[in-house]
Length: 136
Image 1 (cartoon, rainbow, N blue to C red):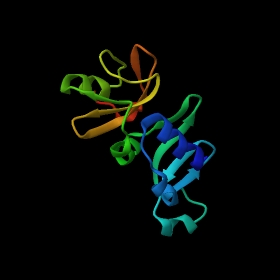
Image 2: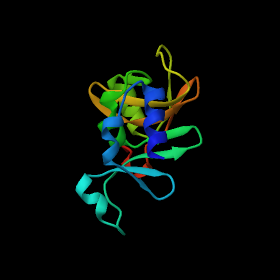
Image 3: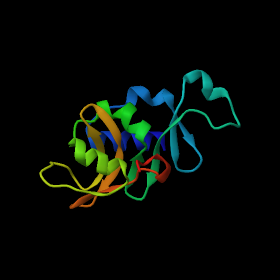
């Protein structure tokens, strides 16, 4: 699944993250985490930072995954203004016009702050910010 994730990221975002391969581990059936190479040998505990999950349309990046890998993305990144970024962090979907992005997973950011990922359906970005991480 790690090779699939690296290939998907390159196809989707135009960035090469293959140099990070040694830091990726599969967690459970559908999750990818980043760990230090030293901690890979520790079995039986959940370790590392959750960065992505396998979904029917490819992968979905966590907030931390977008923060770590976002700098490698060359396309399908949506830059928001302050007001729309606040709407996003409240857990709402956002309409998307005037951005050159393809249908599928997009990375969301405000200025230099990466804020996670969502699914662009052609009209709006579906929000996947977990409820416990949303602004009130």
